[in-house]
Length: 203
Image (cartoon, rainbow, N blue to C red; front, side, top):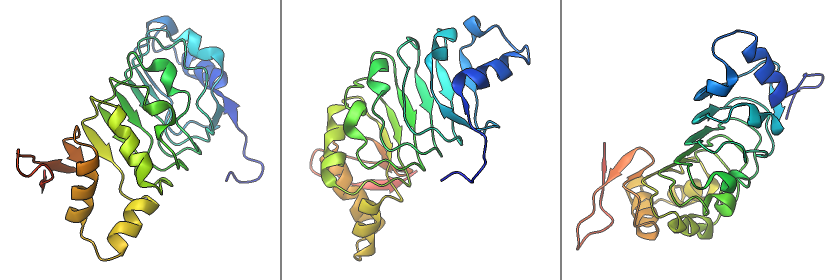
């Protein structure tokens, strides 16, 4: 995954480096952007306790393999962790009371339901280009009653379905039948009527 010799750091190190810029007292931070940090962040440690008011935490394009120590983030609404090495979203459940959006495309996630299904306020879930293979994982997302927008394009499940000759519209129809609560899939708006609950149209 990482090139040999690449230095990696913890979240604590990255926060310390960010704090040295003097932009805002940590205890007052509501949005922390650590995207593409260098050296890249590998581990989430208990330094999350230093940003108790954080509502949006952006950690995309790092080397994070596991979500941990999110407990102190009692205000977290948006978690951005795209382009990391995550194999699971387990760990987000500790933020279930507040979490509304998870951006986790371009990871190694095969079973996103673990952790996510606890997040009953989740509205947006981006999972493009992961390793999702089973329809059961898609169906389990029905346990998120507020889920409104979902992205699944680029997963083995979608590629196999469309690669067999099915159109993108047929893929959208199949997913939307399993997840009646969503209104937007892979960048398309889903238009439902009482008789035709699975129609889709491009935004």
